[in-house]
Length: 149
Image (cartoon, rainbow, N blue to C red; front, side, top):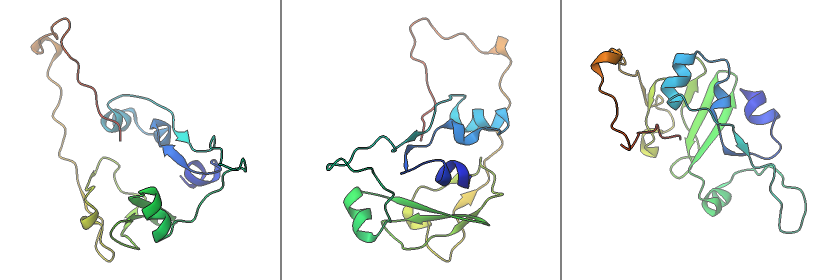
């Protein structure tokens, strides 16, 4: 995780893709991405106004406010610290062994320091209905796609 998120990128991330899940079981990948696969996009292509190479920034209250940054993540040997930047300076630790299919709150108020991470086990996914019991989609009907985050 550290190599993918920190060592292999010069500046930072625009979007983390499904490649972060390389090596995960197919069922986990499907449940998290709806079966979609897309690459991560780094910010390494940025060009600064004066033409100098971009550098990683250290986030402070000022830079967080200036960039509209809402979440910060600190990698620790025992897990990842999740900080709701708009509300706290520190956050709870999510153990590396946490099930990636856990339901995770995106409400910053739930990520208070000194409290456990707001995670809940995902409810069991019902088994899909047999193909013969599912009517085919009407031609031209809109198809639902899983939203990426």
